[in-house]
Image (cartoon, rainbow, N blue to C red; front, top):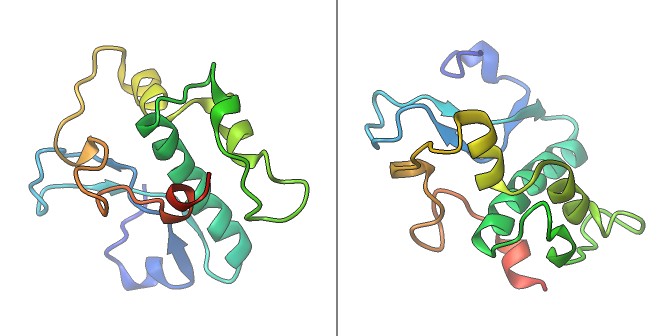
Length: 133
């Protein structure tokens, strides 16, 4: 676990959207946001991490599971040969909900900010996947 409030820790890093809040009640002063980090100098890797995380949310919101991963849209975001990237990611690990249940148990309740989008812009957001199809 890394303390992201430290200026020295944040230097040179970029982060994906938050994908889990330790205190889902919404109390922002008590919450710990869990996110993925990548070296800021590696823009392609940072983009890939961001979009794979967003693809898991998109899949759950659209009822696409590990078993139906072939329903994920083909996206030419990272060049020729990687059009199946999001399909393969969902095939490998499942959608956000499937991963959540695997980590926290089948009966884990998702509340507060750990729910899917309550509006078009929060807490998860995936504009490119939403526009393509």
